[in-house]
Structures are given as C-alpha cells and as structure tokens.
Image 1: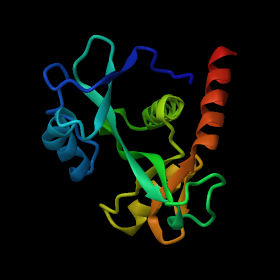
Image 2: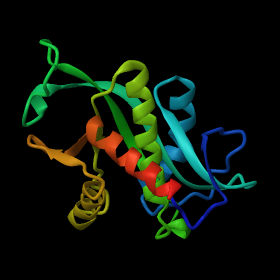
Image 3: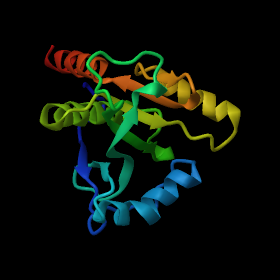
Image 4: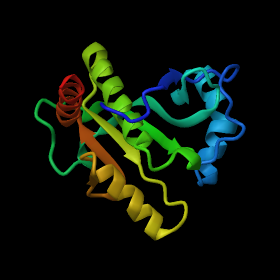
Length: 187
C-alpha cells in the first residue's frame, strides 16, 4: 500500500521500547487501553498489539490490537457455505485501531487496517479464519459512532443484523483487498 510517510514502521508492541505515555487519539478509552492494558493483555497471550512508529523513534503514532475467537453463524444474515454443524466459525477480532491526533489525516488508519488484513490472511493460511469481526465504540456520542462505523464500511465491513455496533468482513473480501493493495504497490 503506497504511503506518503515512507519512514514508518509497524512493529510488535514492546513496552520497554515504545513510548506510549504521550499517545492521545482523542478517545480516552483507546488511550487508556494502550497505556494501561495492552502490555498485560499481550503478556498474558490474550491479544497482540502492533504499533506504528517513525523509523528510529520510540513514539507511538498509532496502533491496532487483534485476537482470535469464534463466532456463531446464527449472528449472520446468511449461513456461510461449509460452516460446521455446531455453528461456530473462526474469526480474527479487531479490538482497536487508533491514531495519535498529531498524525491523523495522513492515511495512517488505512495503513493500520491494511496491516490487519495482511495478518488475517496469514492466520487464515495457517489455521483458518473466516472473517474479521469488530465492535464500533460509541464513545463521543451518536455522531462519532456513525462516523466510525462509516470509516469501517469504507473498507467493506458490514453490520450484523442483530447488532449495529458489531461488524464483519469475510476473508474472501480481505484477500481481495490485500491482493489489490499488493498490485498497487508494485505498479
């Protein structure tokens, strides 16, 4: 995926190396997650956090957190072909995507989302993964919720019929996006 910020790196979060103290994306819950919970959840193998930093700098410009889970197919409008009889399918949960306010507006969120897509493809190749699932946070009121949901929709995510805050994107669509991004980067 092309970027105007070529000196950026996405790395596994390392609390000893990455400076999260000054991170502020404008949403307290996402700031606090990075500052207070991410280290412990990662240490306990509950999630993996990836951070964006400028080459040679420990300052976190953005992050995303992912973990694995199962989802019941009854939550979907249509049962996926080949879904097991027990109704549970493997998914990658996207817990958070956040960009520091000073770095917002430069496409960093899209770069982070593309990284999530790449990780989902690797996981699907290794162990199976039918979709990416996320919950849109409602912090900041209805207008912010709608804005955030629209941002995820711009990547192809669709809402669950039973819960407008929960969204998913099938791996078939994720693979197509990664392939398109790879083709764009090679042009």
